[in-house]
Amino acid sequence: MNTSSPFHVLVAPSGFKESLDADTVAAAVSEGIRRVVPGAEVVCLPIVDGGEGTAAALAAATGGRIVRRRVTGPTGAPVDSHFAVLGDGSTAVVEMAAAAGLRLVPREARNPLRTSTRGVGELIRHALDLGCRRVLIGCGDSGTSDGGAGALAALGMRLLDAEGRQVPDGARGLRRVVRIDAAGLDPRLADVALEVACNPTNVLTGPRGVARVFGPQKGATPAQVDRLAKILKRWSQLLERDVPGAAGRDLRRGLGTGASGGLGAGLAAVGARLRPRFDVLLESIDLDAAIAGADLVVTAEGSIDAQTPHGKVPAEVARRAKAQGKPVLAMAGTIGAHADAVYATGIDAIQCILPSPVDLEEACARGAEFVADGTERAMRTMLMGAALAVASGTATFVHAA
Image (cartoon, rainbow, N blue to C red; front, side):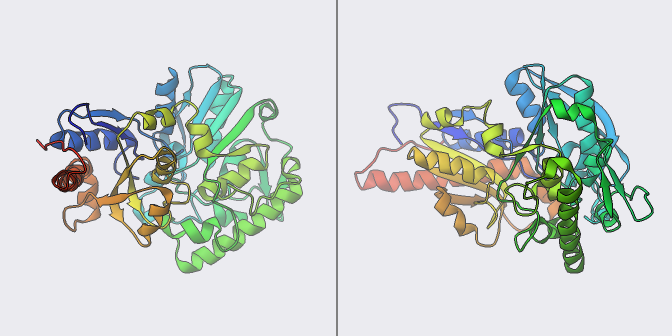
């Protein structure tokens, strides 16, 4: 690190689920950097992944606005929710986590056989009421695994049992569906571009299907995971059979069909286009240009583990940074199993933010403090390495504060 010019750092983190949004993480990382290198030029570019904070971030980036509505939450109780209308005035961003996110499901009620995406469909309908011609649905941080059935029901689709009655919400209701009646689907959907920003590696069924990969995170027991996998496979078959828009689409193993507990498959059945989330979400953010101006890139995520290389923010940031030859540090709330897999994505080092074992409640309450302190520790370690390089005559050194 050369003292003749400012040290440029790009901070491009994800949020920490159920704890810190991406803006807060970025601010805390920046604080930790400046404790050690006060003269550093730090650019904060929080990266959203379709989960919490997506609507607000894209509204801010485009000069748009947030629209607040009360909708049906994932457990059936009403929740205060929102979506964004972007600066173009015709594009809505529906953040599914704002209506059916995991944080909206009390821990004692976490059973993915019972939670529903009905509120997501209600938000889409509210966006249509405002005359939006494009609706972008961000998938992430979901607390549901109903295959998008609740969202489709809110949009007018009828899911009928053997006696012709509408089944209850949640994956448990899908066990009783024998026929789908799509005749009542909101006709405005035919004239609107529906786009789902999703992780393309998430598929609905099979060994890597959404029930087996994400069901346990949403509270499913091993027995419930098996039931859910069978329910979602049958649901995809019903969609392909009964919904005209699903004709010719692979709703079982098509890329992105497992997004947000199968919401991707449900919306694809009514004509939505499933797109890799960073292709969509970075349209308003020039991440590559920001990387080009950086000496160091710092990213972050709540957990760095075996899932990180599969479409998570740190992996996307690292991939782009490595293409430009930039070093990448990843800050992590926790470091999980097989975290070393992330090195292949371009991440050079991982730093856990926790100074000692703490319980989840304390970790969440003190998250920003831990991120700043952990970043400071990482920067001091890096500067020690730089000092050794100076001693060997191979580099110059920026002194810590």
